[in-house]
Image (tube, rainbow, N blue to C red):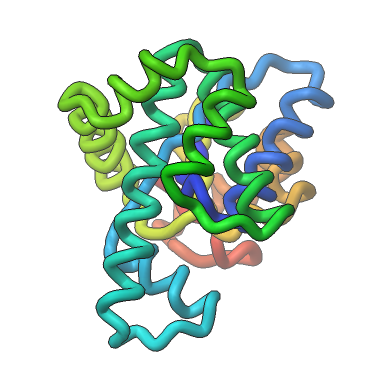
Length: 207
């Protein structure tokens, strides 16, 4: 399971919590990754959510730069271990979403300390070419999976299914649970046979 995210977005934060809750409660093993994703459409979406005029170029550039650097920060933290990266991400989002803090350099550093990272390594990695290239690979993966917005979940290896499934607007814990437990397999198979991109769950897509 892949969740493509804005690392400083509230919707993505809640989607991550849904996935963590699901993984904890299901009896079967679920492998998952949170993948940072950024394009012009996602920046526009953030601006609309915050009621910022789309022609405000200064705000657009600031939002783009913040999401980009936060993505590199998350990647850098993940190089110290997947759990370290996830802790950093959730701690950062808690500051931004729950406490209303704006993302900036100070917040990034305090979050690294609170997440018990090796801060020297973190600061080296967050601006390294290796981290930048790793982020670019994530964007390529998103393109290959036809991801255009965040949050988007992509799931492979569902029981009895030979195709991948993606859906956006991942606020529904019930839909996520139904997918992972095979309750929507019949609907997915019917959609796949009909080569249809729409169905009862309009955000559900076949890959």
